[in-house]
Amino acid sequence: MKHLLFLLFLSISTNQLVAQSKEEKLDKTIKTLYVAISGAAGEQRDTTLIRSLFSNEGRLSPIGINKDGRITSRVLTVSQYLSGLMRLTKEKGFFEKELFRKTDVFGNMAQILSTYQSFHNADDKVPFQRGINSFQLMYDGADWKIMSITWNAESEEYPIPQKYLK
Image (cartoon, rainbow, N blue to C red; front, side):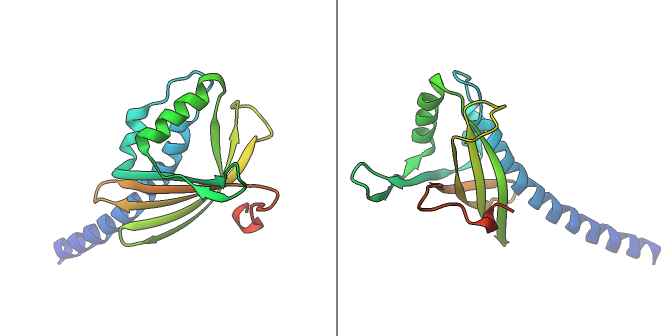
């Protein structure tokens, strides 16, 4: 009987560890991305690490205003995003820090709204930009993979709602 109770306890404990581990892995994926894309001007980013965080078909889509004043978006592959990041950070540093996160998980999919602020230097006090990243991720049984990130920078017309700054 003691042996049976021990096995039951072990089974329940293992299931709880797996659930915690899955949540911790999701948190680590987002934090790792923010750290990996951040760095001083001219500093090489770990592109292998960044690529490993995405699914094979991962996409990134900034939403913005074009020269004609129209709202538009671009759809970038991870390689295209990294090329742009390297150009952007050749002369200026780029540090993106998370302010707030809202996470919804169902089964092996997750949706995260992550409020960010961007700085040119790690010790800057005032960001040059803020906005919200919308992440869609899937759990592949071992790790969370980013399927897509869509982001929209804050503007006078679209300030970040207070509920995403708590």
